[in-house]
Image 1: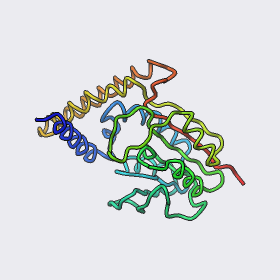
Image 2 (image 1 turned 30 degrees about the horizontal axis):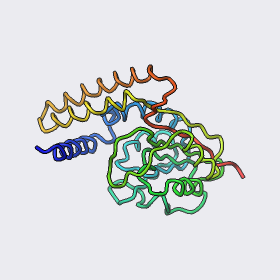
Image 3 (image 1 turned 90 degrees about the vertical axis):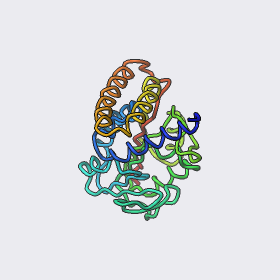
Image 4 (image 1 turned 60 degrees about the vertical axis):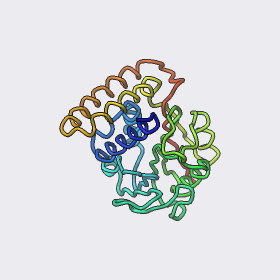
Length: 241
């Protein structure tokens, strides 16, 4: 099998696995890259999300069940319609009036947006005064969802975009590092190879979850400055007027 065909096959297997487990706890342990993000992102989301909350770019709505436990009402939007979504629309021109939401959650979306600064301004517009934005973006990542993979973000660049949009009380923190990034490759290959085999594939998923936990545990103890941060998470507030 040609290398590119093999690569596409592995990606297709990975997509099928992710879709089958979206919304379950195992979804978040499918690779060290995902687990290292979730371990930092969920506590921040649980602390800051509230009221009427928009999941902007909800995708498979993997976080829906968790967010619903923390807020009064959960609203899911993605670019294209799919079952379970409340609305279809672009983060570049969101279909809501000014000052609609108490909080907005947006994870791993802005790298796929050709004008990320415009999207951040839309988040600001749709938040009520005092509203909170919780978002994550990649700093170190493979090309994915091509050709719509446009940007990577440093913590300084993300802070700059948030400040220019008008946000205050901005906190940007790293999530994951080089070990989680490199640990994704064997996880991806092993899951794909065993996915077509019934019963065995379930055991592999559980063993892979343990592998992901081990890699993330090591990653959290290496490179404490996270110069090779895998992702950055930002929490920002729209000032009271």
